[in-house]
Length: 489
Ligand code: BG6
Image 1: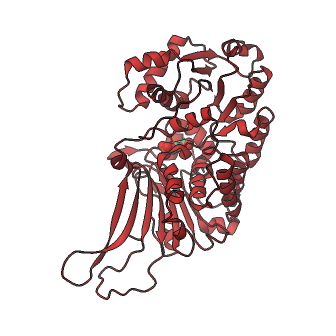
Image 2 (image 1 turned 45 degrees about the vertical axis):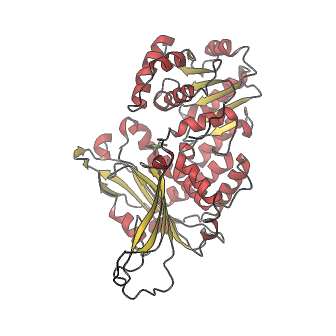
Image 3 (image 1 turned 135 degrees about the horizontal axis):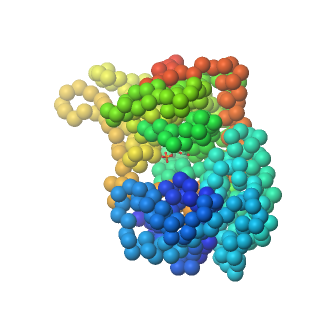
């Protein structure tokens, strides 16, 4: 395990402290950091919520969901007790000026500590919370503000949020979270590309045939259906997670790991993404919704049944994206993501070009192109598939074999949740793994071209059976180009 670098003492104020994200993700992440001695004795976690609750009641509820969040990881009671001492609860209605006084009291005299406000609330409150922090003189020099996605629901609303927060904080204080950037394998993509000289000369249209980015989920929309109905897969997953992954695969080497150096390169990729007009949207995108089906032998309802109404919201998207620059011209990036698919499975697959000429006359199954698969979930690792000779005295018989690196086997540890890394980066003030305003807005610009195309062409909504691998039209999208999802193995 990498050595742990201590972080400075901090006050982390979580707005939406009683919400799902805080209880299910942030508190378990902070407990782990506490167990690893990264949360100093004088650090505090101040959960802010509208519900009138005592600290004891909050801690009891928090402990219950932390236990669930830890998914069977033993919850060390001694650690919980010392962790709970650092957790406070403040009842606050952010739109009510008088109700800020308790938070003001708690923070008074702690101006020198790193202070971070984590906005785990609806984005419609981001502006008022930022203004409340400013009006109550709570913004210190070492303060950061963390914005949870979604940053808006389109370009205009994203701009409005960014402007409202930007009136109170400077960009170097604003940390826009995309939790995919905290995933170990995503960071390993940077290590793979820029910590090895092997891959970089291969990383272009001369050698790469195409790239696939898949984020498949087994879960449905659960208790978030109202949010989801307004959002859909393109806004929920593509605009942020998949586009961030695309940027990390496609970007040029940054000159350092400095926040702006990395983000400048990602922005150039977003700028070079070919906009899709209505005709492109028709041929190069698929949107679909799940019907009733079965997952792991269990019957599950279709999306409309769960919602109890007819719906035009997509739970699956596939897109053929193109990057207009010298490195990637002519190399399609196929993206797909969906809910209620056969299994949770996320990977980036780089398929290299086929050999230009086959010299093995006796090869039965043909020579398959090499693939490099960067697996994000469920097992994190990297797999390079190469053609190899079957052992034996007979003629040449080749088949693909994998050089397979499982991170868990190689490093002997399972990985922590991405929020652990990202929260510590917030306290350190390192923005490399967070999105800058221009990036978010550029990603919206591209996503909006797809949303507009769907609207203009009244594109039909395909469907797929829950528990399947997705709609047939997604197979056709890539099949038309003579390619298959999962690579030509
Ligand atoms: C969130 C989306 O950002 O990412 C969810 O809002 C989705 O709909 C989740 O389920 C997926 O994250 P992970 O880390 O489980 O792949």
